[in-house]
Length: 306
Image 1 (tube, helix red, strand yellow):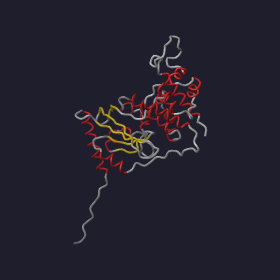
Image 2: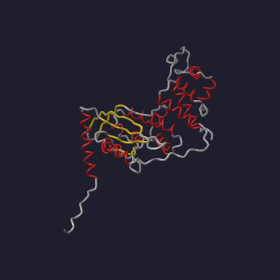
Image 3: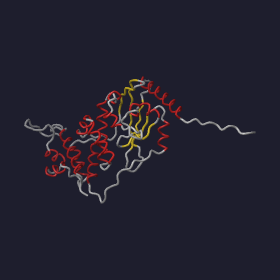
Image 4: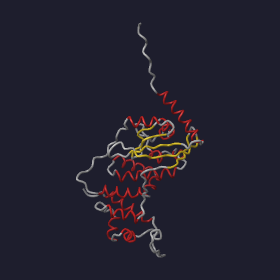
């Protein structure tokens, strides 16, 4: 099986974009006022990686399938790739290698009851599971209350399942909900970029990226940057329609549910003693009340004759 042209394009644009970010001074190379580009030249990357210019030029044109891990490591070092970018480069190389047969398209997996019980047990943290396409496939009551604008958005699929990327880029209300919308948009596009390298044959992922590229200029700009993110942690500031301003820490944890599919457990919590904790507690109280009211009522059978 030959390497796909689309994959070669990804490799070419990624390596060129990383090369453009490094100045000769940063790389410890002599500088010249007559340079036509601010970043490194191909021959300079080749010197830093210990390979020939001809060989690196071929690599940057996308011919990566037969490259050894040692050489990829050297190139990653020369381009100063971070851990996520290095993983992305290796994923691109892996997906470029000829295979004896085309791997089956990744199948979605059901979230098992044990994981749903885990989510429901977290009453003071918003907890949800997302897959590599940023579909929210399970969540506890507080997650549904905290992310109500997304769960109520017209961007949910026919099964009522939200998608973080679709909400962020296609729902105008996301700009109000995410106070740091630019950061959320950058991270989401970078997460999808990493997933595209892991799962190049995922038809649903390709359709999502195509939809976002067609409908959102903001997504197109971020996709063209070729930034990569595998795990996303930090602080999230939200403007909730019911409780107002929230500043929450969020943690992204690997959640292995199948051999191939990537799932992550996302937790949102508030710092103890803050106004955000009080507001999150209020949301949790409302969520618990609504959850109990939604449960079916079980009537005891009428007593029989004594």
